[in-house]
Structure formats: structure tokens, C-alpha cells
Length: 136
Image (cartoon, rainbow, N blue to C red; front, side, top):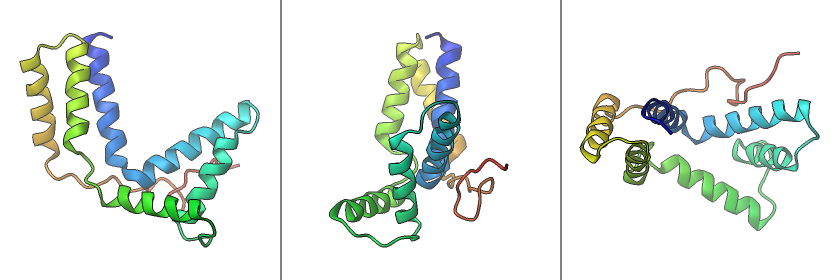
């Protein structure tokens, strides 16, 4: 990976983090749905869709797994968008792409400073539950 690609990946990863857990889940559903139109249906999509309905409160938890999914979703929602592990991994990615350690640290510091306490990006593009749907 070259330096430009590493910066593109960094921007993508920051954008994904800013989506928040609900936005990332809606994006995964949308991508799997689109892939399903070109390939056989994926069991992963059915599981993700079922978990999404549970998290949004459209169905009641029935199994221990359902309660675990809700606990995991609650934990994800309570975590900060950007933690130290996230930034360490991005710095390692930059260094792996050829950035000097000081350069990588400065890039990460500049991004962190510009983000400040950035809130999660809303799901304005989706339906009332934040799901992206293709209009037929």
C-alpha cells in the first residue's frame, strides 16, 4: 500500500466510525441486500436483518442470544466513537504504508484535533429506522 492509499483508507475508517453502530449496521444490511440481487441470498443478511429488528424494538427478545445481541448493541452505543485502540491501529496502518513514526503521529494528531468531539453522523439517508433501501 502506498501513502496515498493509506490516507484514503484512513479517511474511510474515520467516516465509518462517525456513522455510529446503527449507521454501520444499516450500511452492512444495504450492501448485503445489493449483493443478494447479484448472487444467491446470504444467510448472513437474514441474521443481520433479524438482529436489526430486535435492536430497533420491532420484536421482543426471546432467546439468550437475543438478549446478548441487545447487550452488545447497548455497549456499542455507549462507547465513544473514537477510542485509543482505533487511533493506534490507524497510526500503525500509516507507518506500514511508509510514513515515518513522527509523520504518522502528526497526521493522527491533526485529524483528532479537527474532529474534536464530533457527533455521530445521522442516518438521514435511510428510512425512519435508519435502513437504506433501494426504491423500486
